Length: 414
Ligand code: UDX
Image (cartoon, rainbow, N blue to C red; front, side, top):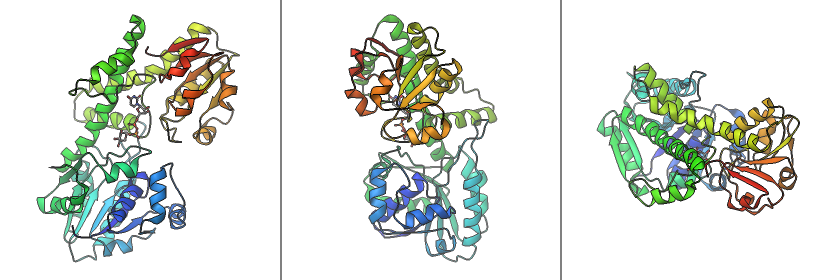
């Protein structure tokens, strides 16, 4: 493998992981971000995200960070890693990706040698060809590829270094060859496709994971009525390797920055091309109905919530992160406040972020939360497996076995 000069534009989790990962592989890496504060913090080796492995390695890996696009001229491959947040109608906002592409094209005008631009941001199928490639038409000897990421939050660097697949969407095979060479020593299976196919693989993967969760939640909702433990159903299904055991944990549903946003964006694209994506629509609906089912179960035990104090255990969208984006806790807190209940919440890491959204609810230690009139378990943090639930009414959205000792215990789907 030849050592390359790589630039990474946009130093969010995806960009920073890409920069650190390629630096660890021995390539010369420059990370570029227009956010001066971010660049300053990274230069001082400060940690930006709740990603312990990434923070650790970002301190020692040899890579340069700058807010200047000019040094990109001295690299051979540029990864565009800007965020693609959701617009209010579910479509994606391409502002950051287009902004990066425009500035990159400006800088690359000066370049005489070959340069490869790689879109790593999550963009709906067809975007790179229709929206990004045109920035580079007629600009020197520049190729464009798509290389989606499949990084899980909290394990981003681990997933980067040992990916289960590398997808290369290429405009021409000579440009795909550059990426094949760059990823040669990752020991992972590589699939080469068209750019739109690569973009679709990313969306289809996240939509499938989301579908698996909503599917098992639907089965779980039936199991609850039939007095069947859906956990055993998932286990039994998972033994079939055509189905697989992962992503069959029923409960209050999926959150985070990717799954809800990507399913919504894919649905929006379906609408644009005149197809009704009815299954994806139900996937999101079932996901939004799960918190309401939890509220119903709570009201079975406390019919009038007004004036009652309801405890929440877990605010992050999954354990081991402080990220509360699209967390089920926000929907639950909204519903409780609407009912006139007081909310008392605890999370090992996400309370500071939640306080910014809800400064007026009460925050307290787990024991205090367990003294509330009833307690809802929203995130399966490990420490919740050792609490003393004996005197509490518990509605469990994540199947914490220890909570079954509660005075009254209700599982959401079991
Ligand atoms: C996801 C994808 O897994 C990753 O490949 C992609 O690149 C980004 O989106 P992430 O958002 O970090 O990663 O979280 P993930 O571990 O997938 O969990 C997403 C949500 O689904 C969480 O809220 C989790 O609690 C929920 N979930 C997961 C379930 O409700 N049940 C399950 O069985 C699995």
